[in-house]
Length: 276
Image (cartoon, rainbow, N blue to C red; front, side):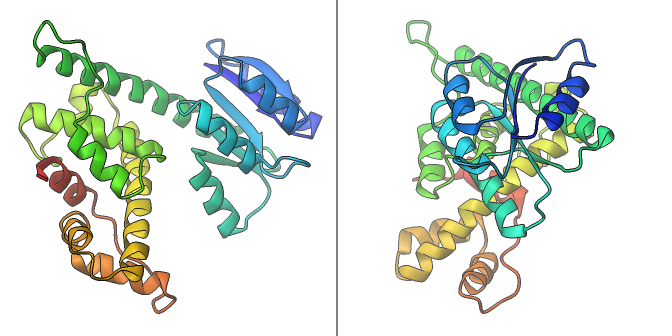
């Protein structure tokens, strides 16, 4: 894996670089103690994972991630921070990061986080390969291979405002596997099909849950503004369930302490079966 480290503290860069390069399969291809300089370099570099400090002068870590995600959506990001503020951390996850590493740097935490990110990258690659293979086998020979996602499900996720979430790619690829196997999500053997460990499967599901939560929040806010949108109401009830949508609406209005629950299997099963 190719890493790039961005932190205005040189000692942090040094420690992280030493930890990463203990694994001979990993390489730190660049470092920077200045966020705007790092942005220019990262736009032209081939990098798998970026470790970036949250609080930096001129351009914050969150803003740096947002800029890069628009151009390089497949790059993975890990945020480094001593900040414990929940709202700021939530904003960081929404900008596109995968994990946090806390300061002061802890060797065990760094190794565990980076292992999870690398597993996630390998797993996404396996999903893409299988999806493309299935799609290729199902198409007439004269037609070019296209990404294995139906326009219908992709349009629904776009309608729900979920397409910027990493979990959306996982959702669409899993839908392809469900449809090709003719099973619901509970019966889908992701571990066997993709050679995943139980932990790797949990990482995928965690990413999907975050994406579904974004969709639920967006849907609830739209229904607050326009409660008579029948199309959105029907779709929301199908994918999320009426009680969860209602709970999320109350939560967004400050009338409830917790929002709606995420039911991963229901969402995936309903999305796979949904007809326009």
